[in-house]
Image (tube, rainbow, N blue to C red; front, side, top):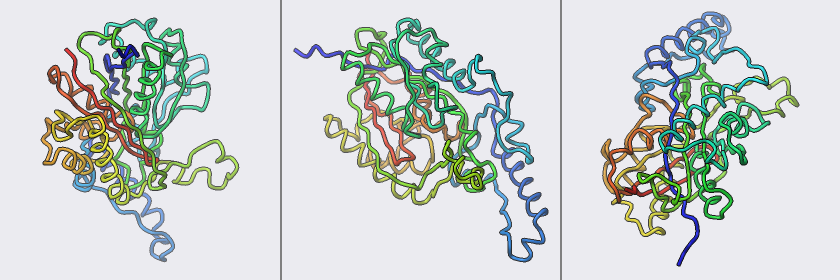
Length: 376
């Protein structure tokens, strides 16, 4: 008889910033910046020395991505054509960091939904794309703020961080190193986005999610059995961010656009869709699951077109909004948090025995799958 601990998802949590930017607001800000830039560089543009900037449009954004709005931690400075970046007061080292603050809010939501106290948790993994600092680890600060006695560490696998974190948490439980693990994904992506880049200025939004992964014996009656997980990475430069402490070695290029988010969107679309779809089908087969019988897909929320094609290849037909729900339209791309937001907001209606898939994919390339079944 197999007596090994069995990991499950007991609950999820979500923190959503109060402020939201619509496409109309974003376009107005961006186009104001374009007008100022082109006017200030008119002579150089006329001489062919500088390329004029093109305006953006709501139609362009929604056709390219499916995004209609996004939540942010600081709306006014992002929309200010003179700034176009988040701004807030710097906090003292003794104060809770802003990234930890939103992570703690999501974690407390997950704990409350599971009926669990922080003292019941053994470990915290902060799994996100952009850490506020290299050290001390954001995870340890979140652990301290919650009052958890155990261990914590950060992990970054870009947009796949949360699913990589879920598998890591599940592995700790299977190995007996922990019984209850919080996977927290605070994503202040407005900080790494180039709001002056027409090709990407609309993509990202801010949010924080948390997933409580526990030994089945501890879990509430309504939980999600983790049927299997699979991780995959393939190196690619098509999504990249060159910001880091070694930028000090090259001071002349320390503030160039490649120190923010950059991507070759068409290449990403072409290469990631088939990779992820095949990975899902293969893993479903390994687990003895018919992929076309999956009740719901909670996919990474980066691009509506990518999700539509991946879902179609997995399910064998055009997925309905019920089969593959989206939060991309109102949250934007929230990096590692996207698939968890979709799961958090669109899973309560499933019935006992229903099987679904949490899947994320992005820079690296990286991809993670978590097959789950609703327990009653």
